[in-house]
Image (cartoon, rainbow, N blue to C red; front, side, top):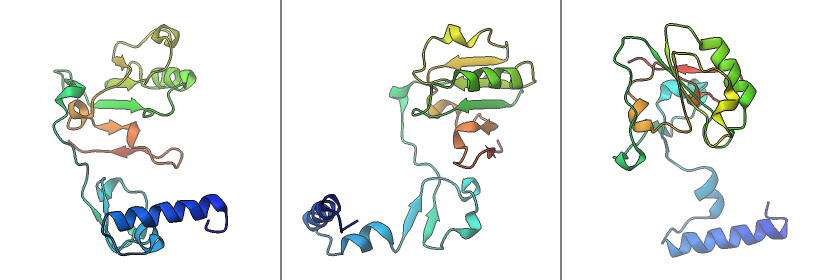
Length: 165
């Protein structure tokens, strides 16, 4: 990276920033191989956690009071809750959402599907009675209620993590 002009410029700016912060450390040492790392997920949600170096401390999510984001209340039944979300970046997946409705519609689960800023919800077609569809669901509401969360899917296909209530 330091062989290209853009890479050299990046290193110079990064080194200057480190100096401004009072950090006396080379860029490579600071950015690439830190002595200690904090992972904002539980170890149980880390794929191949046994391969992660001991200098990583898994602390789980650091959620502050996010009342400004709204809230979501789970239904008052005993059905498990499934959250389906592709996050905020990839939300133009009409076929994916329709396949989820076909796969989980009618099951004894309460399904919450967050579609992001994707187009017209009417394009989804008929929504099963056990589904809620929202553009976004505040994490504060579902974090302790969800039994299965597709937004915690890793970059590996067909991988999903279940949380115990």
